[in-house]
Length: 214
Length: 288
Image 1: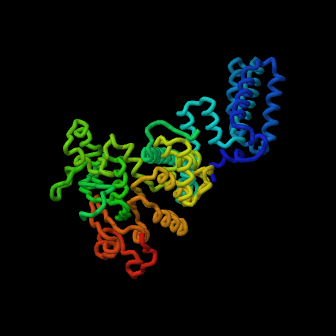
Image 2: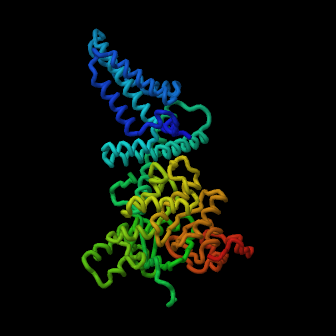
Image 3: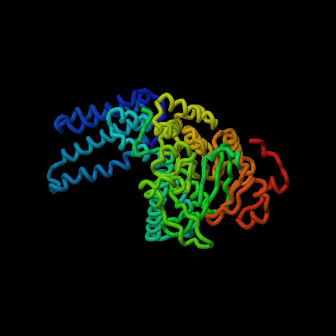
C-alpha cells in the first residue's frame, strides 16, 4: 500500500504507545519549545533534550533505518537554511547560529516524529481537540489523513496506466511533460471527488459544523 | 390503485438540464409506495444517478412537462419554483416541487427532514467514507440528527451489526476491503433509519460473495428502496417493480419479470433479458 508511511509504527504496543495521547502531545510540545527557547550558550541542555528524544524513539521501537529515511528528506532543507547564515556573512562567522538551527530543528523534528509514530492519527486528533484545537483544523486534518491514501492509490493507478502505454526510452522533456499532465489530472480528479464527498456529507444531514463523538 | 398505501416518494414532471446544457431528465413521473423495492435500469448516461440525486435535493430539477416533442424549454440547473413558494403561493405549494418525499416537497426548507428520511448510497464508497474511523463515519448521520451520545453509539453498533460488521468500529476506512467499505457505507445510511433507500449501483465491483451478502442485507431492510443498477439479476431478485430509464425519460414502468422479460424493449434500450428470466429459473426470486 503506497500511503502506509503515516501509520507504519503508530499502531504498535510499547510503553510509548500506551501513554495517554494528551500527555504525549504536551511532552513533545515541551521538548520542542524548550529546545527553541534555550539560549545557544546552554548547549549541554540541547544535548540532553536530544538524548531524551532518542530514548523515547528507541523505547517506541522505531527502527533506525526508518529515522534515516525520514531525515534524508528533512536534513537537506535544514542544512540549506542553516548555511544561509554563514553565507550572508561571507563565511566569516555565524557558524554557531547555523549549528543551533540544525540542532534545534533536528530535535523538534524527531520529537514530532516520535509523537506521530506512537499515536494513531485519529486519537492524536481527538487529543488535540481536547487540548483546544479549533474544530475546523481537526476536521481539515482528518480529511487530509483520510484522503491522502485515496489520492496515493489514484496516483499509483495513473502511473501504472501511463507506464503501460509508454514504449522505449523517453527524453527528460517528455517525462517532465507527462508528469505535469499527471499532476493536473490528479488535481481535477481530486476536485471532482471533493464535490462528491460534499454531496455525501450533505446527504447525511451535514449542515456546516463538524460534530464528533468526543 | 385506490387502496395503495400513501406514497413514500412522488416524482411528477421532473425535468433537469445540466448547467453545460444537455438535458438529463425529461418529464419523469413515478410513485414509490411503502415497502416497495423498485429497480431503476437503463444504459450508461440514461440519467439514473441524476435522478437519484434529486431524491434528497442534491440536485433541484424543474417541474415541467414539455409539449409534444419539444424539449428545448427544459429549465437549467436550480429550482425556479422555490422562490415562488417562499413568496407564498400557498394553494399549489406542493404541486410546484417536482419531487415529494412523504408528502413533503423537496425544497431547501424541508432538507433536514427529507435527508433524514432519504438515505442515499453512492457508487464510490471512498466518497462516502470520509471519517478517520468506521465508528466516526457511521456516527456522522446520527450526530447531525442531534441524537445524544448513547443513542448515537447504540445506532452505530446496531447498524454495523445489521450489515455483518459488528466490532469494526475502530478500523480505518483505508484498511477495509472494497466489499467491507460498501457495507460500512450502507451502515452509515441505515444508522439514520431512513424511510427510503436510494442505492446507486450497490453491487458494482463486488465479488460474488460480497454481492450475495449485500443482497441478503437489502432483503432484510425494512425501508422502501430504489436501486439503480446494471446488475439485472440483482434487480430480478430484489425488486418487484422496474423502471426503465433511457435518454432522461421513463421508457417503461411495471412488474419486474414482465418488463425485463420483454426482449424487444430490452434490446431497444441497450439492456438484455436476464438469464434467470430467459430460462424460467425461479431460484433467488424469494418472497420479499
